[in-house]
Image 1: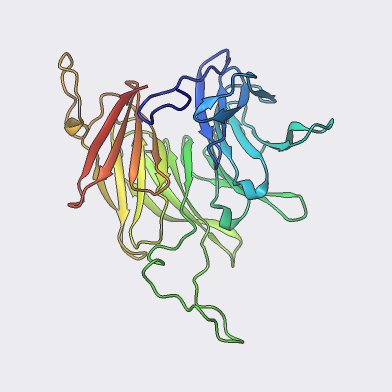
Image 2 (image 1 turned 135 degrees about the vertical axis):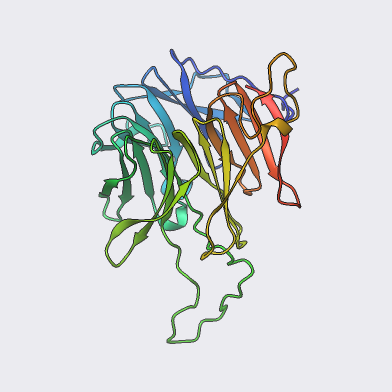
Length: 341
């Protein structure tokens, strides 16, 4: 059978020589980037969900330590990949397509302002520009902005005491814009009534907090807008849900305390309200092990990731299981699928 069922998992032979820390498909789902403790990034071409048998992918070498995360930029900016490492560097890679001597992947930017491991990188929504947020164990967050003249601007500021673990951008679409009538025909000589997109992202830290940062155009600086308190140990990951313009905003956070919290904000001025996922309601619990306490996962929760529509949440737990969660009509989050990795 040429194509595989969606429910089947397809193994990918990466030829990495050590543990793989991240794997990301590009915007079209045609290419897979992986990174590893072997200090390399690899890029594979995908056909119908499988890597092409012809080659073992392209290997990108430049980091001096384990590579924790990779992130694809939007294709309108070209074939661009960011990677972050224990060596304290963020590397931006660009692919020149073709057969000439300059073809293939080259390093176009080395971001070296951090003084400790860089744990997470995340590209902003493409509407905002080619902007990359980075989180580091030195306690700082940085934002790289690609300028039209080919230069990169960098803002760096204190984020979390002890260290920062993850970053995630808010959608560029304003909450409620789908149901709020916009002025379709601007009156000549008047400004359009459409509210501009705000640069905003969330960060997760070793201080057990999630912080929300917004960019102030008047002062040209990043300011902390809100702090989300709810976890009792390091927050390992944060994921801001994509939006189609409905009023409610969602953020998911995963923690060393073995919980996942869903934060909801009903209107732009409302407070964030937290709800814990309850894994005891999950589909399968091995009878051999004692069930964990209510609201606790069996192990540390490492990663959370939303579907493109923002209505399905994948949770990756230290026990090797990935569970999928969905909000029902009563507003209760239910586990709709679980699978062993």
